Length: 330
Image (cartoon, rainbow, N blue to C red; front, top):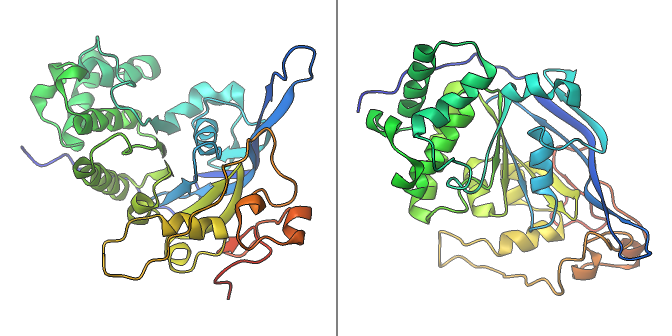
């Protein structure tokens, strides 16, 4: 295989995307003759995405991280709050134009690829819809992108079922890059892959980010994966951010008890290292019936009366937790 073509983008430090108090609510039927209930899937989230950096959002299933991914990818409209791209508000009327700058890679690489289309057609489709490139120009770019993600020229005319899971995810990544986006939303991009393949895909994503200066929003439930890819981390619980900080700070000194519990369940490379496994009691509460005060209080071993009466807020410090009695707080 020849060396991949060199594609570069200018480095930048200003955020390409910023969210302020972002919320997404759903009305859920309460049943016959009952009023609808309000489900707050995302209940006020602040973050920014910077070129060349990865923001990871982690939490249990149902915490709102996939809803967040759909809002950032302009699949769903926020109920409240603001989302800006290059300093301009992201409004539904502008989605058709702005979507070229924000692309998403889904968890299931096979489910997101049309099994009746050849790989070349799949890759060229975004260019057919969004650009005025000639057929020859579209094909040239698709072949270039195949090479960039580590696939061979003969793969251009094959069908999705002829590829392994890792190769399909490489194709999905290539398709997401066809419109030269600034932001990639990665929604559990390796959770459906074997462990031996996960590292190869993560390495590819890192190489692409360095080369193209992409901003990543990385959605995951696996802190082991997040440890290898993230620059900053937000931990979510029932729609709210309960801890935020740099990867180094969060993994070295987690502050929120929920984060401590998640980290205690993460496998360690050193089997001889001392490890304290924290088993949370009870189930994740329903997002339709979030407890008063701190939502984590019913499962928290540090909860006191204050936690059940008031809702703690996330502080403004670079590393902070929404907790009245944080751990490792210096």
